[in-house]
Length: 241
Image 1 (cartoon, one colour):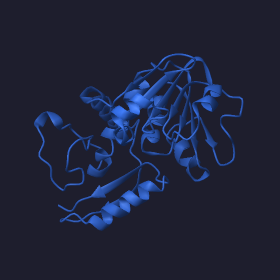
Image 2: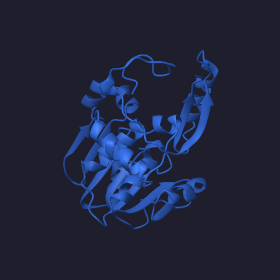
Image 3: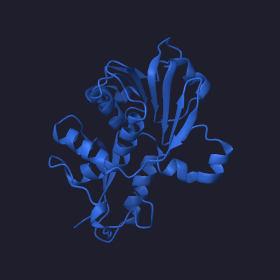
């Protein structure tokens, strides 16, 4: 997960317990895109114990974490609404969203709709605005963006919070707390089972061929593309064998 040097290495030495069986119906690139984004989504959603029929809004539904959140919320029995740009509406719908809002055409905070859970994978709206669309006692989950961290948390975690997918959870009009992405072999088992059952898939927008010696140019292109915030799903680096 990039907690040490070598994130973009062609080879890395790990302990057996750090290896998990990949789904039999995925390519290596597809499987490699599951752990960080998939675990972020499943661990965050597990905190709110979604019940059948609850209304879940996923902001950033076409991104790396958002695409997993849409699929997981659907599997949990929620009524899922996704927020994305117009060009990604059909993609999000294909992942199981019951409704999709094009944020370029409609302000989802001013539509008079409310949700039991708001899963925010973008973090570009003030919590005051988002609180209008959460039912009393509902839940707000911010992942990756680490919205509105306290000054103390910023000093403690700094850029690491945003880099590692720090999840911030609030209850409307209530307490707040933070949850770091944890090692999750059991959750990986759950994700693998869902993938092999055909209930979940990885969306890869672009793949960059790094080559046997680690082409820094291609890595830079991949990072630059991620920085545009227009990636649909994940971006993969492919290393030659």
